[in-house]
Length: 96
Image 1 (spheres, helix red, strand yellow):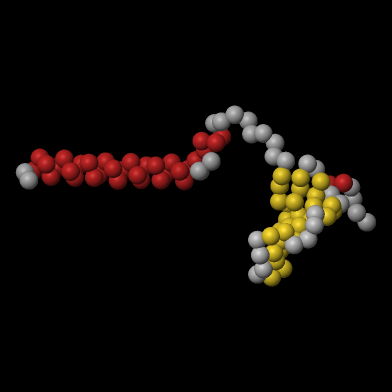
Image 2 (cartoon, helix red, strand yellow):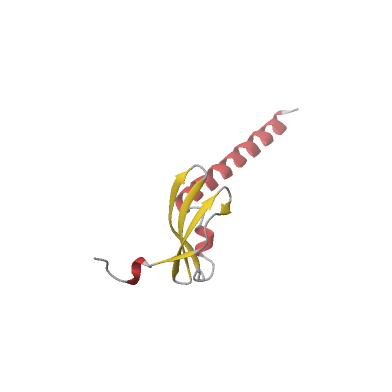
């Protein structure tokens, strides 16, 4: 292995590490969702988790908003434990 081959390998390594570092800096500056911002307008989502409360390691309460209605779910061990119940929406007005 002569000096030219060694210099070429060292330059390739430096160039590769530089490109990796440059991409890391770009991701930190613009964030992982930067490419999504250049896409078209996002359509409105119909489903959203409003709030979640862990009861114990096996169960949790979740308020889910679907089509403007909020529902209370009791989840346990990967399955729905209770039926869907409609809860009053918090945006429906002031409470006394």
